[in-house]
Figure (spheres, rainbow, N blue to C red):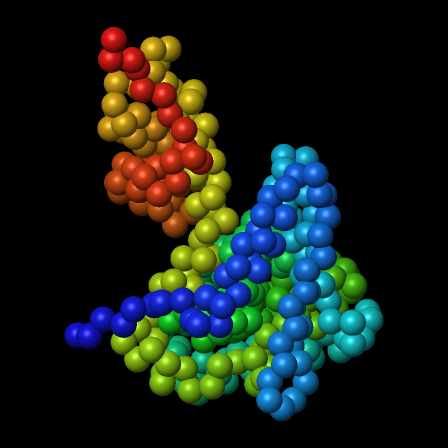
Length: 288
C-alpha cells in the first residue's frame, strides 16, 4: 500500500512567518485580551470569516470564544430553534449517509456525547480541540468529519440549552450549527480526498479526546514532582513507572475516561515526556 505523506499545504507554509509573530504576541502575558479575525475570498461568492475573542485567565492561559456572525439574527423562539436543530441533524445525517460514512461516524458519536458531558461551552470545546481551525482550512486527511462534528456538537448543546430555557445561548448554538452543516462548508465527495485514509475517523476522534488527555497530562506533570524522592529520581524509567502506577491504582477511571489505556500508560507517559520535556520537568539524583 502506498503511503501518503500528510505534509503542510503550501498556503500554510507561506503564512508560517505571520503566524509565528501572532503566536509570540499571544504568549506575551502583558496582554490580557485579543480579538483575531481571518477573512478569505474565493474567486466567486461571499468571503468566509472566522473571528475569535481571546482572554487571558488568572493562570496565564487563554480562553477562546468564537464570535457570532454579525449578520445572524438575535434570540429566536423555542419553536424556531427546534426546527433549526432538526435541520442541522438532517443535513449532517444526509451528508454522512449520502457519502457512505455511516460506519465511521458511529465511532465518533460516543466521543461527541462524552465531550459534551464535560460542561464546557461549545467555544471552550472547539478551542481545546482546534476542530474549527482544521475545518475552516479543510486541512487533514479527515477534514470531512470536522464540520459534521462541530455542527452536531452545536445542535446537541443547543438542544440542552433549549430544555433549560436558555434561548440566547441556544440561538447562538443554532447559528453556528447551521453554518457548519451548510453545503458551503461540508466538503463534497469526501471519499475522493486522500483515498488511502479518507474513510478513517481516528484523528477526528482523537481531537475530541484531547481535553480529557490534557487533564491527565497535568496530573502526570504534578506527580513527577510530588512523587520524586528527596534526592531525585534514580532514572527516567523509575519516574515513569511510579507515576503510571499511581495513576493506575488511584485514578484508573479518570484515565480511561480520557480515552487512554492504563496498561499502556507507562509508554504513553514516556512518549509525552520525550515530546514535551518542558511540560514534564523531573529531577534526577546527582551521580556524585
